[in-house]
Image (cartoon, rainbow, N blue to C red; front, side, top):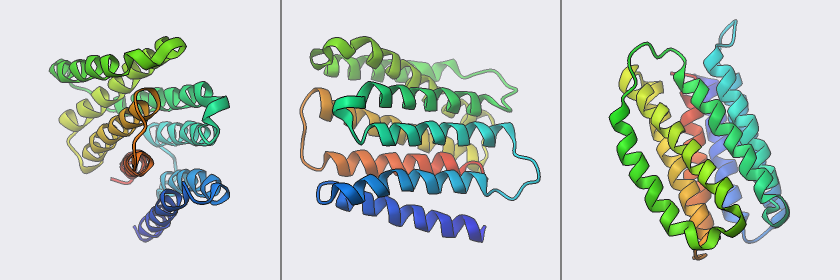
Length: 212
């Protein structure tokens, strides 16, 4: 656990640094933003095990896809749709990860609040989507599916790691909702603080689930 704590501290320092320099120094921001995700990949990889589990491999795959998304979204004017696709892939990999080891029936009642939230966020974003309407709708559906599977994992397996997954999934949804509102509806002060803060904590919880 010592290596887990040390790497988590490094990730926290890097993530906080990214938030601090985001509007002050683009060079440092372009370093710290992906570097934080790289440290999270190392955390997921460093679990003391002779053979990586399927769950661990899928989480690492999701983190690599997220890393690609981090890099592409450093240049949102040119690569927003590619960055969106990268995170779409990350969520799909997380969905597959969260389904591993589930032997009981899925909790379909969890879908109702998630679908209600999805409809609300779409209605809020609708006027500003224009040509990106279909990709954003697809992204909303996939991230809601990811949170649903995270909830199923927490409810069915019930371990600390499974609870971490649910916390991470919800925070990821919050982060992406703020990002979408800031981009498609109205930009506001401290948006990046909220987006990056919830994003890094979400990824840390998902990453840490590999250890618990």
